[in-house]
Image 1 (tube, helix red, strand yellow):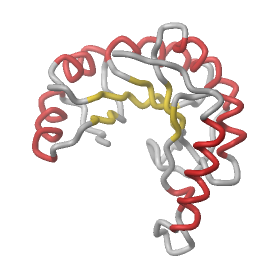
Image 2 (cartoon, rainbow, N blue to C red):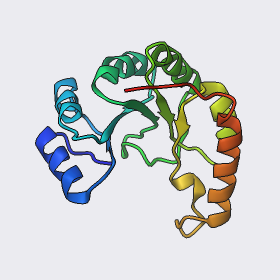
Image 3 (spheres, rainbow, N blue to C red):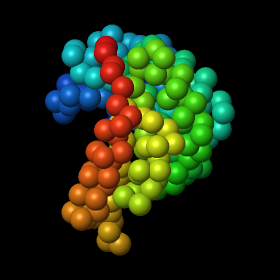
Length: 167
């Protein structure tokens, strides 16, 4: 995941680290994202869209042509992602439905936990889910039992909502 905005810097970082997927967060423009996508050298590119209101629908649809998947996330005034806060899943569902008709996958994140991931999947019908703080213990470390519960509940719920996608 990167908050860099310059395509050259994003691509240089991806090459240096050797990642398979470039997860672009932050305030990247469509032309910059398109350049990253064009020069990704076989890496997948996902673009985070922060679901803070209905305008996110237009944002997600607008970026869809310059990436492999749209990553729906929450944000706060202080943080772009990694907030531990859920967003309006009804808006995320509208985005997922709009992009599904284009064969574009949606990855859902933002405040997901083992306790709410099944409801989130049923509400949004994403291609995949992503978790961070929702599987951490009180010491902010990943908890094996929470990770296991999240994975098994996600797998079960996603098995009924998979869609086929292609690049």
